[in-house]
Length: 421
Ligand code: AMP
Ligand code: GLY
Figure (cartoon, helix red, strand yellow):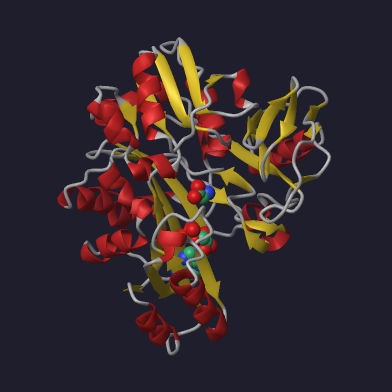
């Protein structure tokens, strides 16, 4: 079978490496992929948001199955367009992708169906939002309604910061259309857990839990990034907590989407906070997380392609989804300066074998050499029997691959190691 994966980051590389293990797949394409992915799939220079290009490529090349990985094409309706042409694909419809594409939609959904989440107010008008933040409890959390590259959330520690955030989103259009509407929500505390799940709209199968490290600097300081590293499983997510989340959050969400007439199929990501009064939803993503995928898929023992087909065929109930009992750690090597200004174009050099996987995100081939081409350049994932060993192996691997201005956090997994649950 000929399979194409839409997207070009570390997550897509992890999906491609996992799909490569399937004996059913004879040819893999990445649209657009990147220079590092080129080793594992044929990269085609079609952007992930170019829906016409994606559909035409699939038709012209007799693609048998498509995996749409990033948020943008899903929210734009890439899967609907492909299905209209008879191409089976993994990913939600445009209507279902609203669960990530609009925070107002997801907040209303959770409130309507009693799914635990932070208390929030939605605003469509700057004056009303400014009036509200002039007296709401502080700290407070301000979120742009639409997609904003993971940067549309401001935790305001002071009232001034809250006012500033509302103004920049609603009046200065910092996130364009995405910030036209906003939500202002209660500040929650507790460990965060990411749970990616497979769902065909009837059955939901959570994958192994994971923990992201979103801030740029050690000790969770510095700016928010797309994610500087992950570990799996997440020690805070006990079997009791998993049962509770299934009953209180996962099944009610699938049910709610069905009742709203937009059944969700694909990978539904639950961003959870385990607060003192129980688990609450911080965010939904309509796709695999990045860099969560880079620790979750290396622990998947079942054939990813078989599972994906069960999801898109509606037969997930009868499909075995098995994970290893091991632990994984992914350390992201970024360009010094990320998520702000950084330099690119440095050669990526590897010395010696790595006992793990390297997933490329911001890399391209220039004059036959693999060079850096983005903020997050690559991630190294190692798997071991214990979390401590996985962390040690990943950091040892960072000594074997790098580039001139490489920067990475030194404490990925440290919080998980200290977890007392
Ligand atoms: P999001 O992009 O929605 O995942 O938010 C980015 C980060 O902001 C999350 O990973 C949390 O650490 C934090 N955050 C979001 N919402 C809240 C909240 N209501 N209370 C506390 N922290 C939050
Ligand atoms: N790691 C969080 C995300 O994929 O949005």
